[in-house]
Image (cartoon, rainbow, N blue to C red; front, side, top):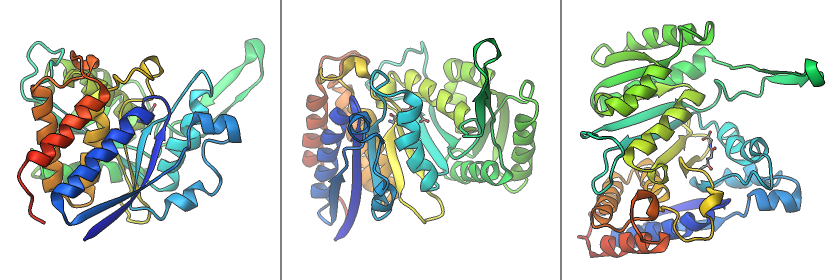
Length: 357
Ligand code: GGG
């Protein structure tokens, strides 16, 4: 029996609504497999927790999380209660940094049963590798003066180590896919970090002569995600560019509510963390209409990470079947509730054929 200990942080807003049904899906997967067991330990760390305790997670939180096989996170943020930069840096980014989750992977593909807003979406299937530990998301900078002289300085940090690591990860992934990597740059406008980014890309590329490459300025790349997403395979991007591009990835699939993400620790020292791309969506909280697919697809990425790719594939096939049969929440044009969609996925998983152990 394979046993995985998962730390569960539903977080804020719809995170609390999409995580529980996704745990049911994982339990169903375990039942289907027969030789797999998940133990879930839930932590209440969130903006509500912050209001009560003055911190998003306790001081001992990282020490506690360290012992789990993975972290399954919902959403973070409630700007009416806690400023976004405090909630994000106090929980989500804190975990990413402390656990050296230096790579963030975010797929987007044409999804059967969903209406993409694109007139002709073709069969796009792309994967963004986002540098997840530095870049524009850096704490270097500060604020001085007030009034007319008030000044804010935010530095972006690009190290050769971090940049090269993300690029090598992208090239290695491309080998298992369609052998192509696109670099997201902006070296015409950002005068230091982006020419450096291009230089590292050219250096890394030399070690992967069988992989095709392209380099797009981020503005043109954002447009191409909308006009011709089918030409892309793996895209490597800095922290901010990757974050923005993957919201577009969600949008062209039909809704950001279905987009998944994995924050990967690639040195094996700490657990990785799995979270959907979407945030806490305060506008739809409490209505039981949040799309659970982003969180459930995130569970598929966790299964892949555990080496259970066959189960992961089964899960994504069932998700596509369910959307094709119109079990859809309102964000993708349906009338189903969060729980109806998730329950349908569970019941179809149970009806599907047994899997090899
Ligand atoms: N699902 C996790 C979540 O709530 N993300 C919100 C967010 O703003 N994330 C920014 C980021 O991924 O850097």
